[in-house]
Length: 200
Image 1 (tube, rainbow, N blue to C red):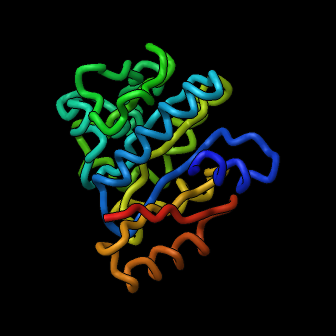
Image 2: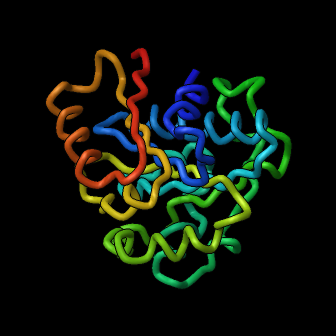
């Protein structure tokens, strides 16, 4: 259902960069990012690069057991090219919620949040376009974005997205937080955006 909604949002234009953000629920957002990456790769035969740009929490990175590996932070600081940072998804770490949805081996590659997150958190605004250019043309890029509003800069990330999804959780996301996040989306998102409501 989410994939169909994203296709409608794209207005018949191909989506190359999809960003997921939210006012809370870093765990739910990380799982949704991982699920979308696998479903897009599996259903459309498109290689996917999945990035964990939630440098504050790194929930997706932790979920995949890559907390001690260089990743996006090191790419942002220029220490590591994006194509070198890409990892294969570890089958052993795939959550049971994705049973039956996982893509064929090698179709989803992953860049974790990295090690040196706090020093590079502010480089997101100035360096993310360089990182994404390193992946352009070869992958559909899905970005597990940060909490908005929050300490991780999101303005450039949202402006570079073809489509942005805000993930909220029924019964957990406060209405005031959702409104603030919606205001941030309206201010910075350049492409179409939508809301995914997960049942708590």
